[in-house]
Length: 102
Image (cartoon, rainbow, N blue to C red):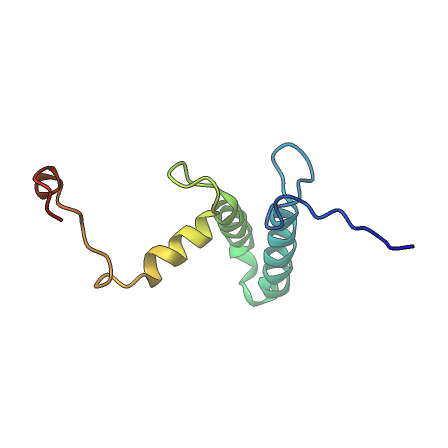
């Protein structure tokens, strides 16, 4: 008797919790929330509400999916934009492309 396992067609797909929320979103909220909760004692008591608002904005900004690339989170898009090597990439000249040159 051999066991047969069903392999999903998309191994890299994200697990959905509900219609808009994924498992990675939950983990990001828990991790950032834990970090924010831990460091709240460092903040002066009169600035705690600003600190909470800052962390909420940070979490939402981290989870937003940009319209230009909806498969990636904003944090990943920003990391790729900052870390890319600008010397490697070059623009394709559309006028030269029409003449058969690249």
